[in-house]
Length: 147
Image 1 (tube, one colour):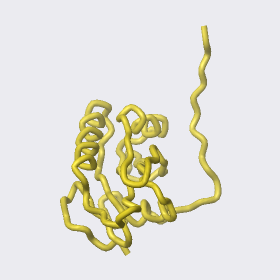
Image 2 (spheres, rainbow, N blue to C red):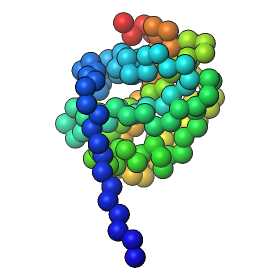
Image 3 (cartoon, helix red, strand yellow):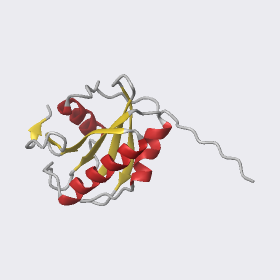
Image 4 (cartoon, rainbow, N blue to C red):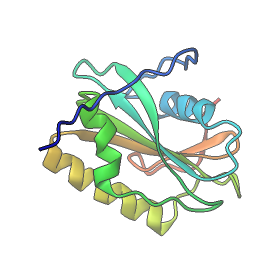
């Protein structure tokens, strides 16, 4: 029989702006700072506790230039380990800088929302960042400036 130990390790030294979980521009600024300089599409999640306070951000997947694949099992692993009550999904569009969602972006968001419902972890928003702009899938708004 095997014995296993699973731990989360906090990375030291980097701080990010405060995030208001009800404000997509606030989350977009945090995601943009976290993903600054990445030349490939990256999927991240912001972890939120029961008091709607952000407790962390983590990279979930890194894809090639214009896509990223992620199974819900992999996405929610960090949220479960971090005791998150809810999450905000984020990713970048580095090749075009255009944050408008693709069909696959919308499909992934729906898949993560459905999986989160089963797990009891709310998916508050899915935010795509581009060059100085973002798109929130929850509000369905146009590309907006996050600065």
